[in-house]
Image (cartoon, rainbow, N blue to C red):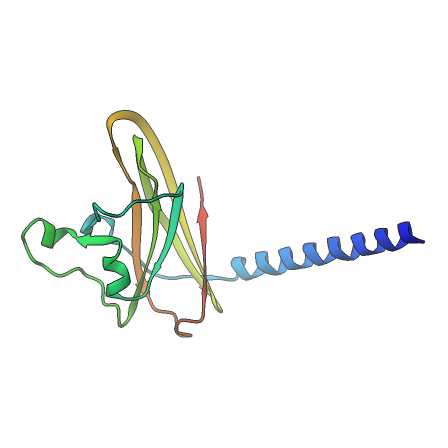
Length: 159
């Protein structure tokens, strides 16, 4: 009797997992592309910012959160032009890797939105070893979703 109940429970859980996965796949498949701007070249990672995990995924909703991680490159270089992000109408999504001594480029591929989900697809290209370390990063600015702050961001590496 216990064995039969165990198998029934296992079958129900497996069916539930398959259903949830299919629902999530449909949600992603139905997502619509949204325009974004790669702003990676406009900023520097702060010198006092230490990435302690292999990778950090960032959703930056305002200038204060942004300045916790990054410095406007134009200000740092002395030109004092303002960063091209309007946090009243835009969000910034980012991926930051831990410091590496390999040439590493993170390139945004696509951003899609469906209901309360944002999907951020990016590519990572790893190159030759070098004599110094840098923390590679990628940042994109995109329009704030119509539903405001009630959304989830799914980061996906594609290669």
